[in-house]
Image 1 (cartoon, rainbow, N blue to C red):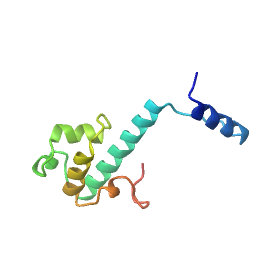
Image 2 (tube, helix red, strand yellow):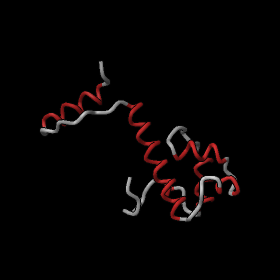
Image 3 (tube, rainbow, N blue to C red):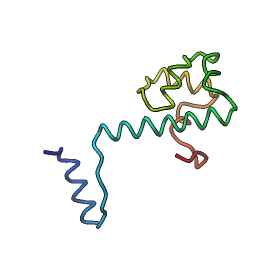
Image 4 (cartoon, rainbow, N blue to C red):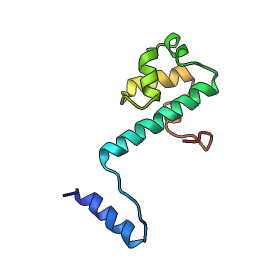
Length: 102
């Protein structure tokens, strides 16, 4: 049985004629990590940096590679380090003001 909130959302979508699949929390997490990875890739490339260059900016190249591919769930401290390395605010890692296609 699905949690009450998901069932309510499905009912509301159905009532509006929407034929959408409501994703499970695990799928939502995967999508969020993938979206964050795409954003990090965009910001890095916009600065003409390679993934390997992140190593010289204080981030493990291998770990950063996994961040961009959405394979890891970074801590707030890691996000701060990434933001500093890319010369943006932490909030800029999450919103694009229309400049980043997902």
